[in-house]
Length: 125
Image 1 (cartoon, one colour):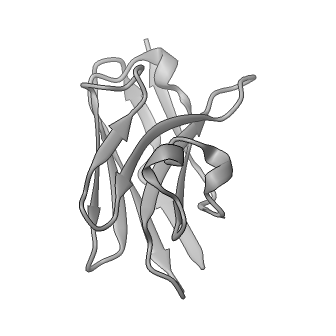
Image 2: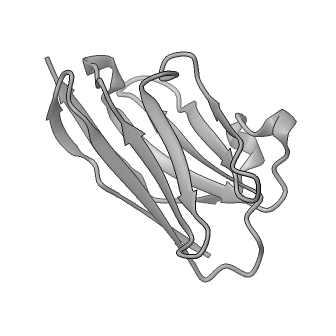
């Protein structure tokens, strides 16, 4: 199983970026996909999650209203549209997926066994 994240880069505050996560080599059906991030000197934190089948979503309070998570089931792609970016959004963004995650633990990084390599997002002020 391989998750490949892409789309990171340098953007000015107020700008937008769209991250993508491509899944390949899957031997299972994804139940939830998610994005986490780790800022310099901080622990990795939850950003957003989406149920693969029904498309229900969850967001951290810090990104709610600015970020949108979506998925393309046929292409096995997960997206994170990031709008109104702020300097505090600067981090390495990781995608994750798992067949066993349920709604009650969808924001917990320990629930996800499959991770992408991370893509760096830098927001300048």
